[in-house]
Length: 345
Image (tube, rainbow, N blue to C red; front, side, top):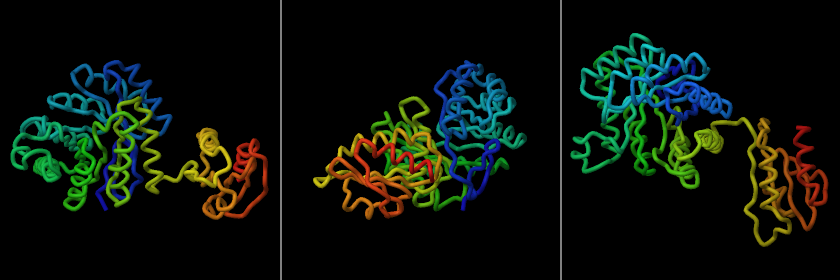
C-alpha cells in the first residue's frame, strides 16, 4: 500500500478512494472565468483541480480563486520556482514541479522549504517531452527506466531537504511506455502515484488510450489519483474518468449499463433502444445493473446478474429481473416499462 497524503481535504494514497482530477484551460489570472470553470467541473465530479501558473499574475490569483471554491487547488509550475513560492504564500493546496525544468538544487530546496513549512504536498510530475537531457542521453531516448529515474532522483533530492509529502507521476503519450514506467515505480517506491496518459488527443482516441493506460494500471492495483487528458472541454475528462473507475470496479455509484452487440438473431432495433436507455439513465444515481439485450430467448439468461433488464423479440420484448421474466410488452413500450421498473427498485 502507498503512503497517504492530503491535497486539501482529499486523501491520496494509503487505500483512499482513487480521486479524479482535471485542469482548467482558462487564463488563471482571469479569476472569474477560472472560478466559473472550477464550479462547473466540480458539479460533474471533479475532486481536485489544477491551474497553470505561467507568470506572476497567475500566482497572485491563487488566493482569490481559493476563496471562491471548495475543492483543492494545485499549482502547475514549470521553469520558474519563484511562482511556486508565491503560490505557497497564497494558500495553494499542492504544487506540481517538473524535474526537467524546475532548475538546480537550491531552487528545489526553496520550494521544499516553503511547502514543508505550510504542509503543502508536492507532485513530482515527470513528462516525457521535457525529460532531462542527461537521462535521454543515458537511455538513448525516453524510456520507462529514464522516466522512473527522473522521478526518483527528484524524490531523493526532496528527501535530502527533509521533505517527504510527495506524489509522483510519469506521463508520456505512448501508452505501453507510460504503463511500464508506472509499474517500475510501483515496484520501487511506496509514494502515491498520479496516473495519466499525457497528450492523449481528442476524445475519440484519447479516451481509449486513457482507458487502456489508466484503467489497466488500476486493475493491477496501481494508482491513487487520476487525470484523463483530452483535447476537449475539461468536463469530458471527468466523464471519462468516472467511466474508467467504474469499469475498473473502483466506483459503484450510478447505473452499470450492459448491452449485447446484436447478431443475426436480433429482431428488434436494439442500437437506438440501448442509446435511449443510456440517455434516460444519465442522471440516475442508483447503484444497479441494467441490461438491454437483443434476443428474447437468451437475453434473460445472459444477463442474469442484472437487477433489471429488457430483451427484444419480434416487435415486442420481455422485462426481467435477476434472470426471472416479469412480463411481455410491445416494443414501443419497452423503454417506458423499463423506467417504471427501475423507479420501483
